[in-house]
Length: 354
Image (cartoon, rainbow, N blue to C red):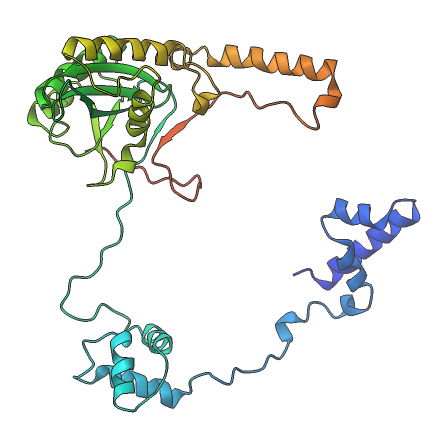
């Protein structure tokens, strides 16, 4: 609320500016207030200050009196109703021909007196656990990996694609296709990927779901030796590993994907090799400003995006009528979050890896 002296000062500033030739509306905008506010203040209310806090408001006629509140508390303390919630108490009273207050009023009275607790012998509902969250500011900081099925030559026969994605660059840094799903196969693939990327003893977080190959003793022992922190999705929540789910969708909707299945293991490996090369070196990824994952992984995105910006600026200078505002934003993406909060705020819950 603006005090009376501040109101008078603002009115004087607006009037002085108006006398010097400026419009009152523009003067008000420069001061951060509206013209309607100045008009209201100049009608006489400015000398009295803000009167909203002193306004007498009518008391609601449906408000519970103290006697009714005490009656609700006494009723909820009785043995017959002591273990029941208001949603059960109110209908029972109605069956007996009695009405005291609504269910919401029962809840408000109990809450005001600190008695709105879990009632009954059933287990208290637990708060929903937040998903694990990590931030990647560079490559080889947070990896996401998973296993998906590739259809085989006959129904019911599958090959298993193991795939590791660097969430910062969106590059596929490691992959293998096996005939079985096991922690041993995962260990071989992860170890080769870490050595190839030079991530030994680096602060690497490896995120996955809760499948048995991800939590097998062979893989956990390897990750412990290589100082890799593990991170897992919540049980039965596939969205917690969204990056791996997204790359598998891209893979299976690729134009050359054999929907009728692969004839053998060699054909599956050959196709995945071609897909990875196309994806890493030719595919422009929308989430990293349409850079290829390999360019982003090698740190070339700043240079390439700077050239794009120069092209747009030159085009705008040549024909400024084509743009009503600024040119397209070609600034590089700085940080990438795994499972950020749903409200989009900057306060993220970072769970320490196990």
